[in-house]
Each structure stands twice: as C-alpha cells, then as structure tokens.
Image (spheres, rainbow, N blue to C red):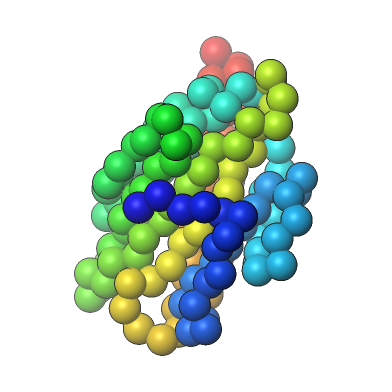
Length: 135
C-alpha cells in the first residue's frame, strides 16, 4: 500500500495515528518525528531491522523506489491486524526522517494503540541507530 502522505486524510474513526517529520506541516498529524543524522538509506535499514524485532509484526512490502515500507502487526490476544506504512524522507545528504501512518483494520476506536506503537517504534529506531554508531 503506497501512500501519498501530502494527500492523506485519515478516516473519521479514531483508530489511527499519523506522525510526520517536524520539517513538514500536516494538519492531521498527531505526532511529530525528529530528524535523524543519517542518510535515508541508513535510516531505512535501521527502521526495518528495529521493527522486525517487534512481536507479531511482518514486513509486507519494502518499495525502495517509492521509499516506503508496509508492516502488519497483530494484537496479542485476538490477533486483530493493524497496518503501518512508513515513508523514508530525505532532508539532506546526511539527514532524514520518517512519515508514519498506523491504523487499525477493524474496529472503531484503538484505545491509543497506534500512537503508542509509533512512539515505541521511533524509540527502537533511535536505539538501533545509536547502537550501530557505537560499533
């Protein structure tokens, strides 16, 4: 699922979360994503590696030309599927960020799960980048 983040209008149901780079302006964004001091390709590698460590999470598609990845994460008890699309954003030669849209495929309200997921994944990506810098 490729997304044009500049045209994204989330559904009326409160079962989604949108996080955009601080450099972008997005009326629908619930979270802001900082920039990372690495090239976009390095951020993509770190992001995919960090998220693959998440339980019940599968990489559905990695489209390098479109600079996007799609993941599916299922809930622990009922196995409800959530879809997460990430765009890898180049801000400069050694600066990049992420645009992330996480949404529940079923249900009306997500009880904040999607925003918590994005915060957790951003922390995991930052940790992954930090670990690889120290090596």
